[in-house]
Image (tube, rainbow, N blue to C red):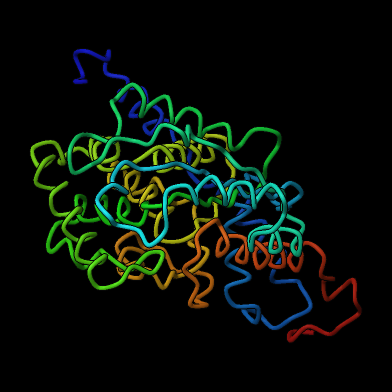
Length: 342
């Protein structure tokens, strides 16, 4: 489907990007003023101080608070799995969703530990996106509709959003997106994902290379990259990131696949991720290189590569602690502690 067939719904996305608000400088100033009075040496909480400022800047509150932190995991299936790119069968996507519902996954334990809400979005698992080596993953209308569905992630008063995904084959999709956006040797973006062997890795690299050749004439537009070599969970997460920005909700990104959704928005507007932080540096693929390109310094680096928002949720625990320190600590005056000047 081309733009003339679809009424150019991508224009709606471009209009929303043009409306993105910036950070609240007044809130940041208030946080810095209070921080200077807290019972600690200046700067002694390191990045925790930066995180408190970041939350305030994007919530637009001089006293930041995290009362409704929520992790949203978006799940989808991919036609490219037919190319033998995963060590696991596609049925595992739905089986893992059932595991999430039963509370048996790593993400359930992390969210419970840090008192974080948890939602799962099933993106038509029984209808895989198109095999990117043969056809576009999505048509334009479906891509925008899926982005709109992802925007629902910020409903219900969420004040800190963590994003994750589940989808057999989606590290191949992420690699294709990065290769399309950044060029060069596609192989450097292809990792082992769920643990493919050497032959599986070759198939995975071949799939990405063939997809790039097939769609080459359309990859100058990041939204075309999204719909042609992306997938439903990628589109939904891009929508969630954009909606969070419009509603002033700070976002914690998970690993390699989530960052691919973020990279599409960044390619459209370099300021599009200013309300986001990288929860961690994944051990998958070239995540570290991608984070550098996006200007995102990860909060954690624990050698994780699970997905399902596990790294984002761990980092949300750190963000909650940062805000608690800022809002809950006593000032020198309140505690009767002598400041360095007094």
